[in-house]
Amino acid sequence: MSLRNTMIASVFSIGLAACATTPAPTRDATSPSALTAQGAWKLNAATSADGATLLPAGTDYRLQFVDDRVSVLGGCNRMSGRYAMVDGKLQVGALASTMACPEPRMQHDAVMAKLLEQPLTMFLMESHPEQLHLETPAGDKLSFTAMPLE
Image (cartoon, rainbow, N blue to C red):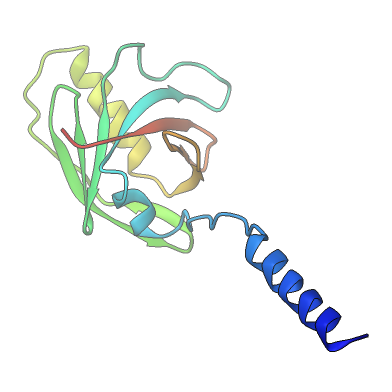
């Protein structure tokens, strides 16, 4: 092969390599940054392992993760506590609450707190907007959509 043909082949190979696509990196769902990067997460659904609805439609819960703290907004009470990733699970500590609302909204907040205060398996779906799915050891599921902070 001539020097000219070798050089053309080399330039062509470099050009092809530059055009090659690499898959988009996926974020580690077990990293706290995966939770904090979105601002807040709006609850879409809370269902039991057998598919029963745990919180009524229109319940407007939002989770916000900042540093090592999580805030639960939108219920009747404001709840907050610490969280950490332990052995690949989201661990939310006991949630402090204002405890100042009438039934049945007080019961809804209690259900949300009980669900969150268990070791939760996290699934982060990279879509637009991103989806966060949390699952309790018993198979209860919480589904959230990423939302910007207001």
